[in-house]
Image (cartoon, rainbow, N blue to C red):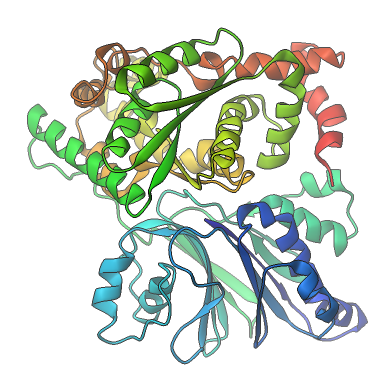
Length: 513
């Protein structure tokens, strides 16, 4: 995983625009500096027709006053391949910067090499050639990318099916810009538009929705979005036999985990001791060295289950107990990482952030989580209520809606918390094929107590029964992290009812730059 960022100046006339053109490189470099935590290994920048690769920003900051209309920047976290980005096609008419992993890049390389020359060993290069052949639905992966097509004079932004990788953009009178995190766009709003941090934080920044692409036409200074590029098949099964559904789901989940650990010697698991992350842990451990990372406050329920399960399965385990005098430190760290002030997102983010901190200490660059299983397999209490009120069709619609909204609710937060520590998060339950199979399973096979029935039955083959049947408990309650947020507010004189006031008056001052 990496960071991508870019800026396009709209108008070449006038002194104000000339100042922007002269400083385009400086602006994109500042965006890249803010996002360096996402890609600490190497960087590259493209402005108009010039491309530079470098390890340290000091190597290029003396040369940033050439007039340019467009610049794109990339910070690399090295996992697959050795190539630095931006990467060109054969004749250098198309360039790409990508944040993500393409799991079928070897197969695509074999197919595409008949008509295309591959210059690197990185998975991102396969995207360029699928773009050249106008193949919009063949990528199996988690990605957000920007392509600069010189011949068409366009920039294309695209985001994966489920939105595992984030991508944001802003469109102002003077410029259009995009980035992997909002904080890089805050930087532009402050530098170019003269906003203070709080105004930039509250600015209406757009996200590119999953499964869509934005085409920016440089000649016209206009853009449009195409959606639903890949089709989901919620009618995967012709028959509703329980054993057939269970066996197909088990195979698909196993394949999903395998492709996410392929070629890796070590991975970490964001581990709660629940059925979802335990199943992922066990399947991953059969193919590489696994360490489980669990976080909570003193006496948290998640830590008790997690430590016992790790011991029973014979897996490496590390835990962190966040003590009371550390509460504020972690609330601030997570708020800075996720660019949001929200009780639930902060609460859930704390154990994810601290777990990825431990993974970084251990030199692990990739972690897996059980994210998405509760939405896909009806794990939350509310699904029983929806079934009672709206019936099976109503529940099915609710599950589909929740699955395709998960990027807004969970994925962007989780990505930012792990990447703040230079660690990539992969989510096997949100694999495109697991989604097809999972959405096709009759809701009766999911909702039967203790909910997620079909997933629990699969898990019972691999993990201890007390984990396979453990009732769902939200991360912020199982870890005790929600209490941490309110405790910090109380420490500074804000009651539980005044939590938003605490965010607006105190916490935002702690995260500004």
